[in-house]
Length: 67
Image 1 (tube, rainbow, N blue to C red):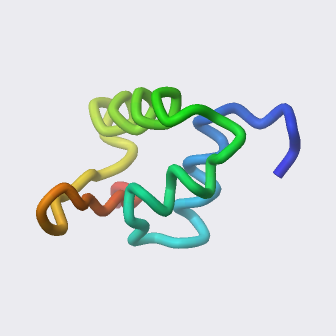
Image 2: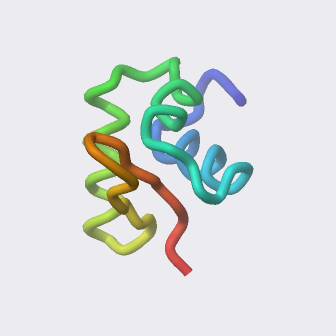
């Protein structure tokens, strides 16, 4: 990844490489950004219909690109 990548770029790239990614793994893949930055962007991308966030278990979520 390039250092100037935005959090959006990083999230979309990570999900392109791992289509069904645990939210925790996604946060680790975006380690250049804070937890809050990643969560806010995942929320925004969900609201805009770009990604889907689904519960996997107690306090565990899966994030994937929307079809």
